[in-house]
Amino acid sequence: MRIGIPAEIRPGETRVAATPETVKKLAARHQVLVGAGAGIKASIPDAAYEAAGATIVDAATALGADMVLKVRSPDSAERAQMRAGTVLVGMLNPFDTENLAAMASSGLTAFALEAAPRISRAQSMDVLSSQANIAGYKAVMLAANTYGRFMPMLMTAAGTVKAARVLIMGVGVAGLQAIATAKRLGAVIEASDVRPPVKEQVESLGAKFIDVPFLTDEEREIAKGSGGYARSMPADWMRRQAELVHERAKLADIIITTALIPGRKAPVLIAEETVQAMKPGSVIVDMAVEQGGNCPLTELGRTVIKHGVHIIGEPNLAALVAADASALYARNVLDFLKLVIDKDDKFIIDREDEIVRATLVCADGAVLRT
Ligand code: NAD
Figure 1: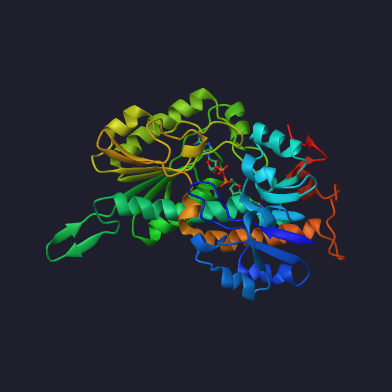
Figure 2 (figure 1 turned 30 degrees about the horizontal axis):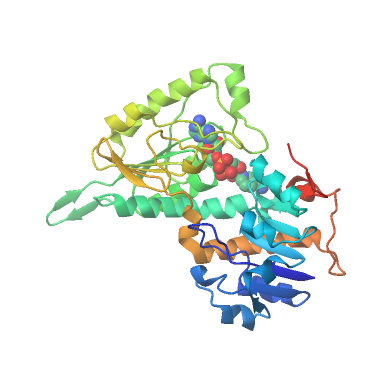
């Protein structure tokens, strides 16, 4: 099979879907065609891919392969260079119905890796986790860089400096890594989430959990989430959470928000009145910015100062750690390929496999997801 790895062309996308490590494994069984310069932004020169067994080709040749490995969905110009029947593997945004329809009408057989179920067998191919982990780390790095004070407590001859207070809203994969990273920098950390098991995880990392009690069975039930993901909480619980968060935000120096509900607009957790009540010079990193943001004042792709607070709306944090983000993503992809390539090196669709079934979003000209 000819496997193509084109350079990503979306603005700000620095990652690449294969590395010399994964190319070496693929090239042992397949012809691997890497687009010229595909790895440059992730510090991987073409020569490294060649040494791993790939052929360096132009974009059209990489996109014209039998199977194309990508980070992001192809745009219309890229789709035009792909053939009907091409197998596409990538982070294809399974909730973007317009994009799914476009890929289906181009005749692509498309696998959206974000749609993999959260079962143990899928962990090694879980792109959401590998990328969120990196993004959570980078969010703290950006916050520390913008914040005009120290993160750790310091006792010096010139006096004592207090440790920064960090508030993490939403403690999934990104939030847990943000807590761990801020902790390593010496901050004092509090965190909030809707899902009850998170409390123990937060405390085990040495942070304090902000408990918003459940007052009804309905609240308790919704808070359990579904498939490992959160669901939208009832308005009354959200109001009580906002009141508590408002008080904690007044004391915080840095807030990192990561709260997401799959396929929905991100919940608003830091209202304008809360930003207004924060200390001048504090920093918010809104990791949910691409889903509308957890703070209504966040602006996509910009850092703005509102009511004296720096609000960072960087959309693709994992791409700011291009080399490691690519390395982990490429391993996720390689692991996924084991499910769709048989022992005779042929492409197969095993619809009995729940990971294959969940990730297959387009085939035979149709969208397979509603
Ligand atoms: P996510 O990116 O979908 O959401 C981020 C966090 O925001 C979640 O923890 C969610 O509960 C929280 N959130 C949503 N609404 C909120 C609100 N109103 N207030 C506060 N927080 C809110 O989540 P994720 O990082 O994808 O992880 C979700 C869970 O799935 C985690 O517990 C993770 O460990 C688990 N997980 C399991 C597997 C597996 O078993 N294979 C794989 C990956 C992740």
